[in-house]
Length: 160
Image (cartoon, rainbow, N blue to C red; front, side, top):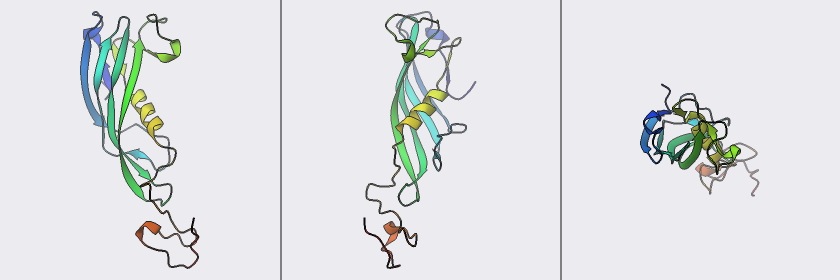
């Protein structure tokens, strides 16, 4: 069985039944599709899967650390993230009433694979600009010195 797959067979026959889930796995195989950015350590998912009558609601939180390169100073830093995830899975073509077809995921059999959804949420949670800190001074455009480590001595520093 893959890392973030959950067998829901126990709750499939009873509307209102739920499973508490606490999973942790390496970030191996989960690419963030952004140069200089990767999973640093394990990924955790803690949440609940509920049978809501012909559909299965997955709610919970994803927690991990992301290693990234700062867009200003190019230094490497670690970003701890904890983000919510909510998905609805249906096993039939139409699904139960009240759900838009675009709002649900297709359930094959009795196993939910959260890995692609965790990856998607991690990618969407990344800020447009990755900064090691709000006060990051960046690098000197002339000599390339990291201005966070001290003033530039090349004499050509351009103040922003």
